[in-house]
Length: 454
Image (tube, rainbow, N blue to C red; front, top):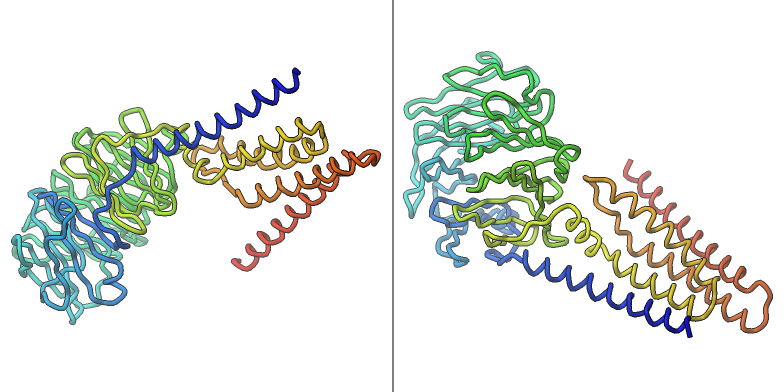
């Protein structure tokens, strides 16, 4: 009688945990489900001061039919393409007044700057540096304050003429390789490079404090509503309040991801830091929270509107999330990772096998399945302690390992019913040997793959 009660309660627990886990996961996904405003793979996005979303389709780039599509409230309202517009810009930026500027590479290795009047692109100025320019980034403070970054030089347009800043006429270090540039609200130019951060003000490079990032790659720059400068590098997010640099990473703030490729600051001064792997961490004072993206559709770029609506350029589409989208803590983030990796499916199957072992009174099934569980869950639980890591989620090997050991234990159960001595030992041994053989095959395949890569 006691055994039946135990099995009934254990079975009810298995059902409740399975239903509860998937119900909670589906609820969290539904709350953070983005409205699709562009349904095909994009290449670039920009949100202008009128709330219009500029999207460059990936397919147009591959076909060399370059175009920008402009969307308002999810509806396509305007299209610009290279074939019909002689001033079609390949890259667009916006200044602090909301004016749009575009840059064009001319046939004689020059550059042309164009402005947008609301319906068409018009030429503002043209410049030929005298050699092929490798364009790294472009930023604008106003019509008379435009900056272009090459690989190791800077070009500035002051409304009348162009200036060039290179190794021979400025304080740019010899090993500089510029990744990004940013013009802040005080007209200071911040430069993120392979060397760290530099700042240009009053026609010359300024000396930064000793705590400024140096000797590290900087990939993204932005400014907070309070004037704080933010910079993203390899695994670190840096802030400058005007006097002191502060470093945020996985150790002191649970920052997710490796290379911080994009930074946006919303109207509540929350900092949204996007890593190259698609992890999105949100710093709100001393608190760090996260936004879980759609599995398999990693976020590549973000834009935040004046109403705090979040526009996400993803691998497959461009989506928009409402301003009050729920953010999650680290525990919930790990839960969502585990759910999408199929770990809870494995857990339900594993518990069902344990239930069956009790029901059939076969410790051979239970023992052999426990081997699979200990190996697989041991790896998963170890990785949960890694703040910056994602659980492996190798559900296929884990599931196969469980099935192999379960079949072995089941063999032991059936031969036990025929009176074979030590049947549980035999069944458990078959399961463990089969599971070990499977793991060996997986290890061989992994090692072979590594040798092919190297």
